[in-house]
Length: 360
Image (cartoon, rainbow, N blue to C red; front, side, top):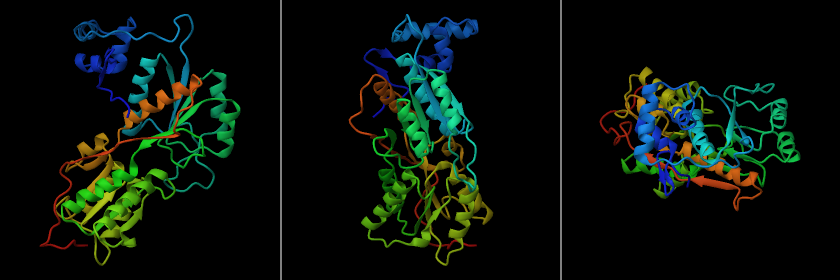
């Protein structure tokens, strides 16, 4: 499992630990370490004192006589806290390895005929730029690549790693993700322990491996508890907030609505909350809600969201380290690396209400 951003190693504290100690961002601490001038005197003093106090030792670069190697990180968007967590993990791991990172965001055009909630694919021309700037490897986060694009990467011999791929990658492609199946089991088991039996699930995209694994885990937990599968309790919303709101309305309109729902992303839970509020229903009094991701939105929601945490920053850092090995000619033993998930209990779940049926 990847090292968390706050961890120290036998070689001393990481830059992230120093930054937290000084109350600054990692990039700001990096500027001080590298002697940059664009740092306020008071900030420089705090960082310098933290460096001395913690005994930080600057890690050597690959070769001081040549320019640092470049890697590309291709993300779907920089407008989400998901991407922020991924960037955090990549940034720290890249600094420790002496790499420079080029981030490409919002570079995709919707495919012709793409429907709502469908993720666009990177343009071929964008990939051509990797060769032009001498990139040594690529990390793709939530990207969908065509067979032609996979072939292009192979032809140009550019190592790449997928972070939580949106589609099942071809055989031999290296990827890093979370233990989605186990996370689905954990979410459903939590609701079962509270006494819920009518548990629905709002999933993401049907063909996305992570979404399917979470639903499979949910179904496995219900089967182990001796509960029959209710097809009407399984809805897909494409990881879209508005679609999740619509799917929640559909669940509430069932003759026997659920008392709890496992939602396969924290972003979609916001739509669930909105649909319940429209009906005058409260979380968790009238319906318990469990999310997946543990993004900052989970803590900001009212009530705070019980959710399955997937270690996004650690996933990204692990992917970068795997990419570094591939850049050095070493092939990972396994093409798929999964990091553990865990349940974070907050205020959005409670035992089912027995004195009041869900209204419309």
